[in-house]
Every structure is written in structure tokens, then in C-alpha cells.
Image (tube, rainbow, N blue to C red):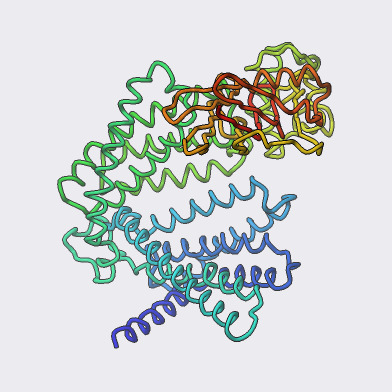
Length: 594
């Protein structure tokens, strides 16, 4: 009956979590209830309270960890320590309530970053001035998160399976019941289960004897399981080492060329930095040679790689302006540089400083006037003003339309306008017309089309065979339908089909190369018997028709090609050519081998 004992222990741990984190549970119940009411009525709209409740739950959990670290078991101080968490939830509720859209990009980013900062504070709090390190607390939290994810997925899948079985076998289950179940599991069960896996950490000072043993609960929580140790030491670290070698070689080869402008490398380096920092925290208690070598070498490598990438990101501001994304990339780069220094000097004992820096930078990024949104908005407006001034498109704080702006400068203007409009800052650009909308007013305001089209470039040709007199195909040995599309499939696209005529195999190849489309008939050895230039046929159609869309007659759509070896006639049903020479063509091919 071990499973019964396990179940009893789990229920007991969940009960203990409720009594240990009462304010967090209250906030979670409020958030879950709001979501349930909205699911049931589809009209109950209190999302601001729901978001503030989730933030409050996290803040209350941080307050509880701080209370346990510094004031436990002085119960009279518990309410006082939790008061700031309650105030933060209230303040944040009124802060997002004044926003026109609670699900706007800015609100979501602020909420995400604030929640992340609170979560890091939750992990860091037990290690403050304690012989328990931040790496220990991080390991325990990481394991709790993994266990919570596993149990929540299994529970959610189990409930869904039961409800589905009832729905199929017994009676119809309202679809909202599935949503209610998912809400309860994700919004209430999972957070409480996670908190139940967080141990009561010791309150001893970092000056206490390091030989003093932790409680069994703490030792189990902060220990690295054998499977996890093998995964880290013999899989993740070696892979990271190999990737580092490749990354270093790329940087050395391209340091004077593409490295400084390669936008694809930026997210790769950010991901690399995150992995290195996570591994550094998770191997805090590992003492094997691989882990020790990683702690010794990789912080130094991380320092130089992140330093170069941060400089590259700063350089790109002159070409693209300071967007919200680049603000966070640069801020993370600064954090990673500081973290690499901390890991180089204090690989284990003082790594809690990493959490301090991360929390500080997170708060900076959401608090005006140095937050990502204010800085990015002002930076983008200043960048747009500079580009317009450099191209003589700004006079007396008003945009002057100009149609001969270099293509690179047009791109800067278009990207900046789109970024400002996407983030809701376009109305704050003083030199733009009132009620400016790029989809309607862009070309009139700036003098060029934001999509790079001119009147000539907007012309395209679309040919479709209309229903005509039936075509006599009695003289052909084979007929098949083919198409090639270089608009969506890229250049040098080809379609190959095999046909059998009188016991022999032949190959029809429809291909595009260098904006020329051709159809060729080859024998079984690959020898070309006959070829038809579709592009030349398209030119004939252009000359014989007018307008950008034309319905073809049978005579216009049929092209005949013949030599001493074969007949290859083509009936075009659709032909679309854009300004770049890319095509979509659909046709019937009629073949006779002599």
C-alpha cells in the first residue's frame, strides 16, 4: 500500500502549503474564480483583478520566504511582512486598470518581467546571508518546477480522459467543463503543488559552521539526483562545449565582417548565455572533473562572447534604432557580463549576487523613465527624426514628402513607423499628421510606398483559361497536369513527372531558373527530346493582351512545340508573374513521341 501512503503524504504536503502560504492561496483562489466566471458566462470581465491576483500570489510567496528567513517563528511579524505584497497587488491593479487594453503588449511585458523578478526573489530569499547558497535554492526550485509540471500534465490528462469518456459513453459534457478543469489544474493546483515542494530552509547565518548538516528535507531538495547529474555532466555540458567551439570559430572568422550586423546570431547568443548561466547554477553541488572544469573556464568564455554581442547590439542601434527587443537584449547582455564576472570570482559561495543583479535589472526595465517602453519610444522617435532630417524630409517639425529617398533610408523609416504604431506610440510623434495611420496615410505623408511598390511594379499578369470549345486530344499519346510555384517555394523550383508511352518511360520536367520557365521532354536515358520556353510564351501573352488580369481564349492559351522526335503542346490554365519575375504557372501538357 505504498501508493496510499504516498497519496496521504501528498495531501498532507498540500495542506501544509495552504497554511504556510495563506495569502498566496487566497490570491490564487481569486484569480481562478475570475477565470471560471469568465469561462461560464463569457461576459465576466475582471481581467485586471485576475492579473493583479497572480502578481499578488507571487509577491506573497516572496514575503513568506523572507519571513521564514529573517523573522521565523515570530508570528506577530508575519502579517507585517506580508503587507507589502498586498499593497503591491493593489497598486498594480490600479496601474493596469488605467490602461486602455489590459492585454496590450506593454501590459503583458510589464507583468511578465515583474512576475519574473518576483520569482527570482522567491528563489533568492532563503539564501540571503545564509550558508545555503543561491545555487542550492535554485536547484530545489528547479526540481520542484519539473515535478509540478509532470504532476499537472498527468492530472490534467487524466481529468480530460475521464470527462471525454463520460462525454462519449454516458452523456454530453459541456465543453466549458473541460475549460474549468484546465483552469483549476493550471491556476490553483499547480502553484499550490509547487509551493508544497519548497522545503523550510535553515535560518542559520552564513558564518555558521559549514559542517553543520541540513535537515533531511533540505538535503533531499537541494541534492542533484544521479540522473540529473549524468544529464548535466555528460550530455548538456559536452554539447555546450562543442557549441562554444563552433561559436568561437564563427566569431573569429567573422569578427571583421558579418558578426556586427548578423541579426540571426543575436538570439542564438542570448540563448547560449542563458544555458551557461543555468548550468552554472545547477552544478553548484557537483564536484566531478567535468563540472569543475566548466565552472573554471566557461564564465571567462561567456564574458568575452557576451561582451562582443552587447557591443554589436549597441552598434545596430544606429541602423535600426532602439526597439524594445534590443533594449532587453542589451540589458541582458550587461547582466550576463556581470554574471560571468561573479561566477569567475565566486563560482558557488556568492552566486546570489547574480539574483540581485537580475532582480535590479528587471525592475529597472519596467519602472519609468528608464523602462524599456519609455526609452524605446523616445529612442525610436529621435531615430526617426534623425533619418528624416538627414534626408531633408523634415521642415518646421513637419514631414516633407520625398520620392527619391535611398532604399536603405526608406527601410529605416518604414521599420520605425511600424514599430511605433505596433506599440501604440504613433500618436506621440509630434511631426506626423494628426490621426496618422500607416496603412492609409504613409505614401501621402512620406512620398513613397511603404511596401516598396511603384505604379509599374504594381502591374502583374494573371491568365486563366475560360471555358471554350472542347479540345481534340485524339492525336496525343499522353496528357497530364503540372504546376510550378517560385513565389512561395523559392527560385530554381522544378516539377518532374514520369509518363509511359508504348512501353517506354519518359520524363517531363517543368522548371524555373534565372526567371526563365521551361518545359522539357526527356527520354529514359535523360536525353532531351524537346523543350518549350514558357517564359517566351508568357511574353507573347503580354503582347497580345492588355490589363493586369485577362481571360484567355483557347487560341491564346495553347502553345505548340514540335520537332522530328516529339510533339509537346501546352495549354496554360493559370499564369501569374510578379514584379520580381517570380511565377506561378499551372498547365496541361500534351505529349506525342514519334
